[in-house]
Structure formats: C-alpha cells, structure tokens
Image (tube, rainbow, N blue to C red; front, side):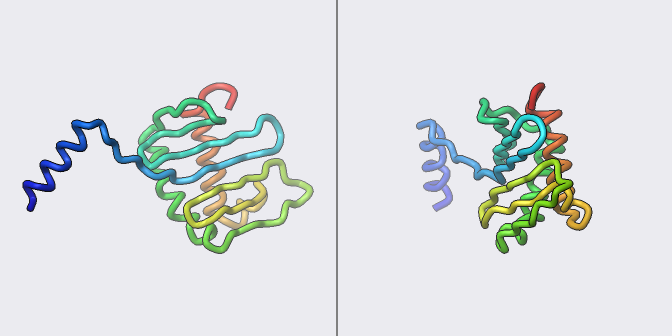
Length: 132
C-alpha cells in the first residue's frame, strides 16, 4: 500500500500537480493615506495591494500563522467594533471562519487586535515595499 501511495505521489509531482496552501487571511486597512490590502498565504507569500505575490520573511510568516489562530475566535463571532471619532484607521480582516472589523483605537483593549495592527505595519515595511 505504501508503495502505491509513493508511486501516485511521484506521478502527480511529475505531472506538475501542486498542492495549493490556504490563505491565512486578507487584511485591509483604510484611513489616512493609501488603502493597504494584504493577502497572506500559508505557503509564505504575501500579495500587497493586488500586486504579484512576494515571499514573506520567516518571522512574519510565523507571526501571521499565530495571528490567524488568535483571531479565529473573533472571526467566529464576527467581531465588528464601532468606530469612534478619534480613529485614524479602520481594519477589516477576513479569515476562514468569518470577517472582523475594528478601528485602530480598539488595540488598547484587545491585544490580538494590537498584534494585527503591528503585523500590518511590519509586513508593509518589510514585505510590501515602498509605497505600501
């Protein structure tokens, strides 16, 4: 049986069949300046503002995987926090189990949302390139 599975996998690899890794999340930040959109894939790639996918540095990939797990409970409850007048940015993150929406001011009371904001800032600077 193991030999049959090995032969099948070898045949699929020879045919160019690749297994697509799932997206971890789609993050969108709107507010002052340009809108930022990031599609983060579990394979270690990130697409910023609809551009060609780039490799995500390993520390950011680990952070993204952790963040997706941390935000899952909020996604299941469809977290949608009100936007106060003093907010600068509004974030929306679509995960497998749902979408969450929150203002930047929510990070002071929700550590997982602060982590999402930090990820967006770091990934924009390190992986998306200038102008992100």
